[in-house]
Amino acid sequence: MNGGRVAALAVLAFTLMVSPVSAQVTSRILVMPFENVAHDGRIVWLGEAAAVLLVDHLNARDARAITREERRDAFAHLQIPLTAPLSDATTIRIGQLVGASRIVLGTLQREGDDLVVRARSMTLESGRVETLEAERAPLTELFPLFERIATRVMASSPAPPTPAYPSMIAFENYIKGLLAETPVTALSYLNASIRAQPTFDRARLAIWEVYDLQGDHDRALAAVSTILQTSSVYRRARFLVALSQLNLQRHDAAFQAFKLLADARVTAPLLNNMGVVQSRRGGPPLPGGGVATYYFNKAAESDPTDSDYFFNLGYACWFDRDYAASAYWLREAVRRAPADGEAHYVLGAALTAAGNIVEANREKELARRLSSTYAEWEKRPAADVVPRGLERLKLDADLPRIDRIEASMANTGLRDQQELARFYLERGRRLFDQERDREAVAELNRTLFLAPYEAEAHLLIGRMHLRAGRWREAIDAFKIAVWSRDTDEAHSLLAQAYLDDGQIDDARTEASRALALNPASTSAAAVMRAIAGR
Image (cartoon, rainbow, N blue to C red; front, side, top):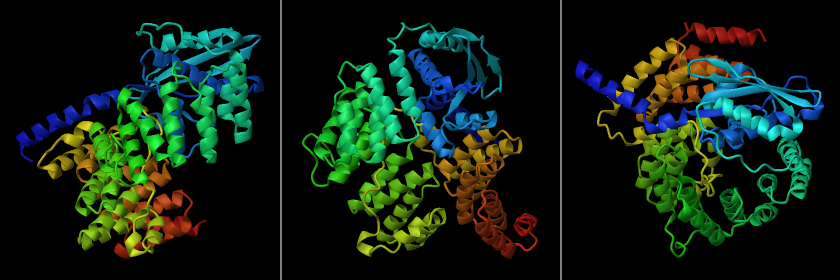
């Protein structure tokens, strides 16, 4: 690269790093459930209640605190139980996953009739920890207590008007319902919450979730259908109504429900779900509506960072028999989510139909490496090689997405993408060597956006997952690296990840492949010795 080009790329890199989308994502606050330090059975429910209340108060101050739903999704992604005690290191990993810049943690305990709450705020970028002054109040004053803590967390933000609090008994039963381990127990608490305060509609939303998870969509629909337009959760309730109607195959009603919400405030998830309804409904568009590809395309234009919209668009084009368009949009999907096995498989099918057999076989091979599911799909009849029903629904009309690639990258339009990809790869490699993993991942994600099959980027990301103990994420990254460039280093690292994850047979297989490529591989030999010692 010449000096002028390097300077130009550096300016562009800086522009991307401080883009508005990036700034939005990294300014969020993650509030973790507070620790019950004395293990007092009377206040077990207050740990989660503390997080819920504090998030409510912070969001009333426009702090963009991460909701319980987003936190729950992050825990599921990391395969961590929602109520598990966590180390600071794991908490930081969760904060990074959801794009937080600050984490608030705390403890609580009973002292006589009072509840004593201590909180601390941790800034992820600098590692600075601020301990807030302890707050004490009778349990009956729980709501104003956490309002004061929110004021301390957001010291420079003006306090909003005091919200209307639910009754204590309604709130306690609501939280206990969220924490319940069985559907029967959850419904018992949540219904008790509504009996205590019939206007407390958040409990009805939680009841919807219980029934939806059980596949009881009639009861899920009934739970939220009675929520009035004057309720603060009305928009969320109408979205859930639409999801239930879709699950009950009442496609026309579901479409109209999503459309009414979009008419009030259009968002990419609503556009996407309107496309899903039309795709599953089949036939000509509903009156006043468009075809599925129209809605998926509009969703992708609204949020070009979300791979699901591009997958849905490519998937819909497949069933429209527009194989060239299908391949184009599915390539965009895997640019944004390189480990998306479904996208790789359907891309392979589209390339086969378009006559590009060599590239098609490579995509299908990668899909099979990512999951054995796709080997079974290969056995499907040629006329039905791609299963139906793979469209990806969004489960919230407005919930911000986590773990984004900057939207501005989707529209750079640069001609020399490979040169820019090398620029980001070099930055990522240097940051990796300095163990600045969060910054390194951002640079390497930029690399993969421009060059999805850059083997070294996948290797570096896998090695960061490996040293952070995220074995399964490391395995996926190393699988793609092996597929992108078959080297003994990639096989050795994949073997180590399998070994760390307890998958001994797979570890032995990969170490053997590494030694076949390079009999002098010390890392593969070390894996073999570790296996022999077990």
